[in-house]
Every structure is written in structure tokens, then in C-alpha cells.
Length: 364
Image 1 (cartoon, rainbow, N blue to C red):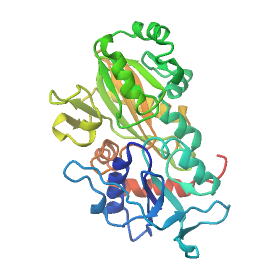
Image 2: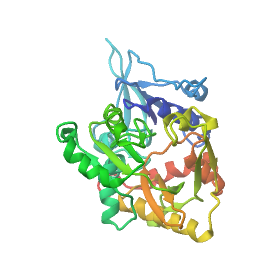
Image 3: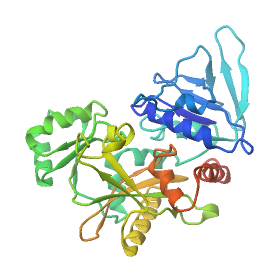
Image 4: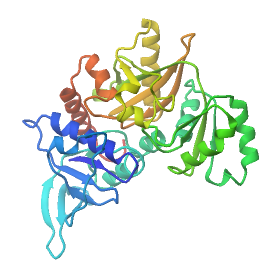
């Protein structure tokens, strides 16, 4: 099952990602059942047409509602998807061996769908419930990283009851971070709701923008350095995870908000340059790869993840975040980094499915 869409603000990016996977997966090896989740949470049979789900003229696609709903099995040993239509007896759709949940953001990438699949004893691509939840919440993510001795930057957290009720106390934790600041929803991806703050006068507006996406907000100190990403792929048969060559995000002067935001990532090709492999000394590349593996292992990630770091002018590596279901279109950084490392997009899809089929169900 290729599962995509979902209720988060990243619905359209998830759908576009599914279009890429549907167009590249080996049809001689796999029978594919595309299932979409509408913005309202309805599970429906989706068209198996990759071009139908592409971003067109700057508009992201959307899973349409349907009168027929798809129901996931919730009994151990039952792999059958069923279709419910008004006034009809439920009908069988297909038996599913493995699920590829191409979902980004809350209600999909955060452990919720993973928990549903665990209840069904279903094998699926990617991290489990806890790793997905930790990887989605930047607050607890940083706490886990710090607990494992990984290098992270200074930050502060604004909890739902802190703003504006305890604003003065919150400001006391934020002001020592200096400027610029990056204000983010704690549990959103694709840079949704992220603002760069160069003056504390702009902090209120930035916090309110982040709170539109999540009542919990994280405020990070700006770090002077290059933005580097590294793709991680789970190891076979208990071996350590594998890493790609790192890639670099170069934000041009044409970027409207001065950083790698949602618009620049998906709709403004002139705003960024993507360089892979990144032009870095060998010893820095090796350090990034080792830190990426340690970051992956710190949260017990599985399958795939993209680890984002900063490399400072004196070659110090600072972990920014981990993304347990990174953008996965053929043009996204994760598959591009693997392509530069010798693994094609179809081969990468196949490897992820095989990793999911290899692992056991239940507690691991």
C-alpha cells in the first residue's frame, strides 16, 4: 500500500511525493495499491496515475473525497483492505504485505498512523511509534539528542499556556539566545510557520504565526554556518545504518524570507541551490556521517531519515533536526543524496520496502 495525503498542512507535499514513488516503483516486483487520506481524514482508493499527483503551476495536488471509504484491518493476521460504500456490503480490496506511509507532519509522520499499523500487526516503511513521535517534536527531539551527547544549539520552548500568560518569564529564557532567532512550530515540518526574527519587536508576530500550526513553539538561536543534510538508510540484518554523501542547501538572495522556508523548498526553484555532494573536507564529511548515524540511533529510528546539521566556519558540526519521513520526490534532497552515492530512486524505493519486509512485527 502506498499511503499518502493526510490531515496536516503538508498534505500536498505528501501527495506529490506519492506521485514520484508511484512512477518509480518496480511494477514487475510489486502490486501497488494507492490509498489516499483526504484533508478531513477519509481513507479512499486513489488513482494509480503518477502524473495526477504532481505539483502543477505552483499548485500542490489534493486527495479528493469519495463516497467509498477504505478500512484497515485491525485483527492480527488479517491483511485485507476493505471498501465501505453507502448501502453496500463491505467488499475486499486487496491483501497488503507492507505499507509505505508517505505522510508528512502531524497525523501521519508523528507516530499516529504508525500506531494504527502496529495494531493491525502490519509491516511498514520507516520509524516506529516512539521514534516517529520524537522525530516530530523538536522539543523532545533536542532533549534526546542532548541526552546522547550530540551537539545541539541553544533553544527555548514556549508551551501552550506560556503565551501570552507568562510572556515576561518566557522572554527571560529567550533573550539570552541572542539574534537572529528562528521561531518554529514544535511539531510541524517543511518549514511551515517558521519565521526568522532579527528584532525582539518582531517576536510576538513570529510566535503567533508558529502557533497557527502548533500550540507549542520552539525558539532556536541562529547558528552561523552552512546548512548540510545527510541521508540515512537502515542497515540490513542488524547492521549499522548507512549514510549517503552529504548535500548542501545554499539559500540565494532571491529567497523572500532569507532562509530555506516552505515556499523555497517546493515552489521557488530560483531561491535555493542544492549541491550534492557538498564541497567539504573529507574529515568533515566523515564526522557528519558519523553524527547522522548517532542521531538516527539516538531516537531508535528505522528505515530512513534525513539528518540536518550546521557546519560552522571552524568546522564544528551542530545537529539541527532529524526528519523520519523526509521529502521523497525524485527531486528531493533525500533521494538526490542517495543518487549521488550510487543508489538510484527506484533502487532506493525497493531497498526501503525490503527493509520493512525484513523486520518483525510487534515489539522490536
